[in-house]
Structures are given as C-alpha cells and as structure tokens.
Amino acid sequence: MNSKELKAREITDVFSFQHIEDSVDFMHSYGTLMSYYKCAIMEIETKFNVLNVEFSLRYDRNPINSIKTRLKKPMSLKEKLEKKNLPLNLETVEKNINDVAGVRVVCSFEKDVYMLADALLKQDDIKLVSMKDYIANPKPNGYRSLHLIVEVPIFLANEKRIMKVEIQLRTIAMHSWASLEHQLRYKKDFDFNEYVASELLECASLSENLDKKMDNLRKLLQIDDDFE
Ligand code: 0O2
Image (spheres, protein in one colour):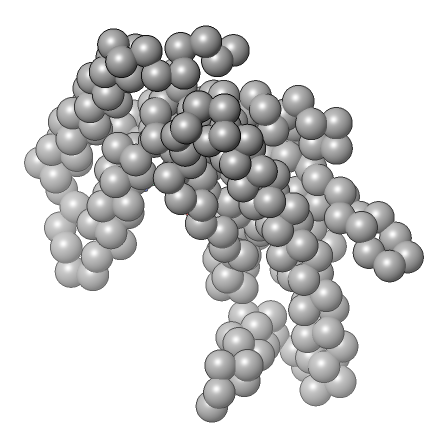
C-alpha cells in the first residue's frame, strides 16, 4: 500500500461507512476540509516567518528558533469528539474541534513568546478565540506554554473561509520539557508513577529557572532592550 492508500484506509477505518459510495463522497469532503486547514496553517506560519525576518533585521537575532505544524490525525479527531460526546462527522469537527490545525512556535526567550503573540494578535485579519497562558499559570504537572486559538481567513478562488488554528508558543526550555514528558507519558510498558511525576515537576522547575537565567543574561547584555 502506498502512503495515499494508507491515509485513505486510516480515514475509512475511523469513520465507518455502510455503503462504499458514502465513503467515496466522505473522502472527498474530508480531503477538502483538511486542505482548508492546511491553507490556514500556511497563513499563520507565513505570518510568524515575516515577524521573524522583521525582528532579525531590526535586532540582529531571531526570536523564533523553529516552527512545526501538524494536522490532527483522524483517530485523534474521533477520540476528541467521543470525549465531548459529539457525533463523528465533519460538521462537528469544524465546529467543535479547535486544534485540527496546529502551529507550534519555539522561541528563544520568554519575552519573545509574548512579543510574537502580541504582534500576531494586532494583525487585523486575526481574531482571538481564546488564550490559555500556561506560562503565567503552569499546569499542575509543570507544563508551560502559551496557547492561542485564533481565526484566520483563507482566500479561495470564489470564497473566503474563516478557519481556526491552535498556536502553541514556548521557549526552547519549555519545548524540551514538553517533548520529553510527552515521550515518557506515551511510552508503552512504562510505569508513569508518582515518583516519575514528581521528578518531572522538578525538571519543569529547573526549566523555568533556565528561562529566568537566560532572560537575565539577555537583559545584562542589553539585547533588544528597547523593543516594546
Ligand atoms: P497533540 O498531539 O499535541 O495535538 P481542548 O483542546 O481545549 O479541548 P485541552 O486539553 O484543554 O483540550 O487543551 P490544552 O490544555 O490547551 O492542551 C492541548 C495541547 O497542549 C495538547 O494537545 C498538547 O499538545 C499540549 N499539552 C497540554 N498539556 C500538556 C502536557 O501536560 N504535556 C505535554 N507534553 N503537552 C501538553 P493534544 O491534543 O494532547 O495532543
């Protein structure tokens, strides 16, 4: 099976069909909706790349270390709808799942997280749907990041569509903690016990200290101090 066939199999396995014609129609609608989300991801990614270029011209450093994007997998969509007790169809996906399209921006300093979020939210085609500041208020397990759900327009040949995108902004230290914690949490046959959880919490506090120390160095070296 090639990768296209594998993807089609994944979708038909998750969304079950009684008739083959239903599945053909559905695959088309699913592909179309996902392509809209991909366009929204491209819009947001470009906006961050533009901000990165502007900032590096002005201050000779990059606030963005890396950008990663993803579309939520069919199985994750199904699980999320089940958790919300909602029927599994494309209308409920578009209406109720805010993170079908995801953009993760890894920043150099904590200050950059807020600077980039502010600069994006000031743009007149972006509408903030919700914000969760897990940097100011970390999750009990130690997770830190700034989460935004935004609406962004995409312009097609004959229509304009407003799409939702989840943006996660975090520093390199926050990202390294979250990536490793995620790996451990989903590791098969691994006993995620209280000891592991408390060690991870301590690592989260070390990572927070690292961000603070790095920020102190940035201030000491007066790097882009004048940026408002
Ligand atoms: P994936 O594969 O990363 O997409 P909601 O979307 O509002 O219904 P929730 O859980 O309230 O659900 O959203 P929240 O708190 O904003 O977090 C959603 C995403 O943040 C997760 O996506 C993770 O990417 C990340 N995240 C949140 N908490 C943690 C954590 O404790 N550890 C790590 N490593 N990441 C976290 P998904 O859907 O879980 O998966």
